[in-house]
Length: 103
Figure 1 (cartoon, one colour):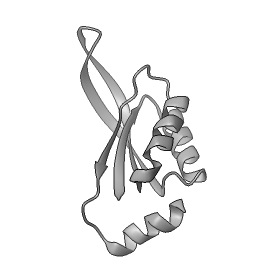
Figure 2 (cartoon, rainbow, N blue to C red):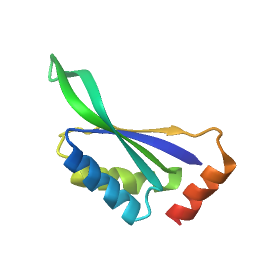
Figure 3 (tube, rainbow, N blue to C red):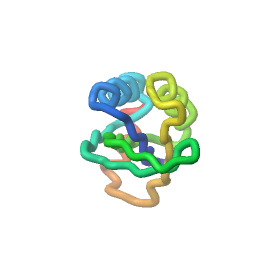
Figure 4 (cartoon, rainbow, N blue to C red):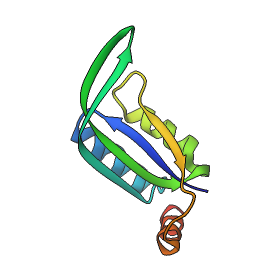
């Protein structure tokens, strides 16, 4: 099953480091780096906010445990956001391309 994984990061350097590692190790076919994300969240009993970048990672469900391990090893946050959603449909050629890239 194809998935999309969302990860927020504090800066472009960390975004590129994670994206490059995931692609080089064939854990992801593509990582979009989206700047300008403002996050509001509850942390340690207080409402906090941060300017972040959002990584949108395209992969396969079987790769998720290794993706989580890799992201956590490179991420500066104590509890990084790493959430995965199923891709229920899409351009068949694009989904095939994902398969080719991560094999």
